[in-house]
Image (cartoon, rainbow, N blue to C red):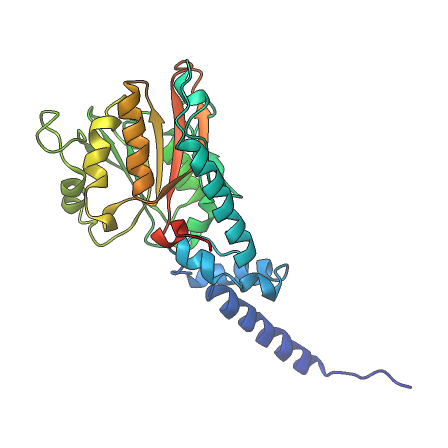
Length: 296
């Protein structure tokens, strides 16, 4: 009995059709704005992806298009969040405040530390997801002339446009970022400051989405974030990477509760031992309000 022989041209046609189908299926579940240059990469990676893995409508909607994972895995994320959020809201007292309060309640499978090791580097949630977004926009505030974060982000994401802000004058490395000498505030206090909304308007970014805000303004976060979070919700960044400084406990709780009420989850927390036991780096991710609704 002879084996069935398929002509080479037919084999090639089948492979091409299957590749197109796989790319189309993947794109229907991926964040938008996938460029043509990424299609070969997607075809190669999709060879190891089961078609069942594209069943991700829940995560797509509830992450505003950032995640694509099985509904069962996403529901488990929601349950983890709900459990830890209840613990966070107990606000346990402790000599070193952050030891027993405000723990991460969400976990990014491919979080990556960007920038230098130690003080200055930041954890970013699944940064590879931004490679397909040609309109990617990143803000970095208060780096005091240290551009290590911007340099590594630009190297990893050449498609992203990076703007750096500081109250003092510095110069961005060539082809890495655009520098702006700006004091973040409400336009009145501190003196000479600009509000979040006015900065975005001046840069003509009102119709763009800010993927990341990396910020370290030496305790000024407690005055600035109420202003930021009261601005147009469409202007809020997806990720906020920030060093939180010690101050009155009431102000600290208010800071976290404002972020929580604006649909941010905590995906990273680490002590900055260079600064001391009371200084912590936090990373927040903004999700769709539907994520926080009852799972019943």
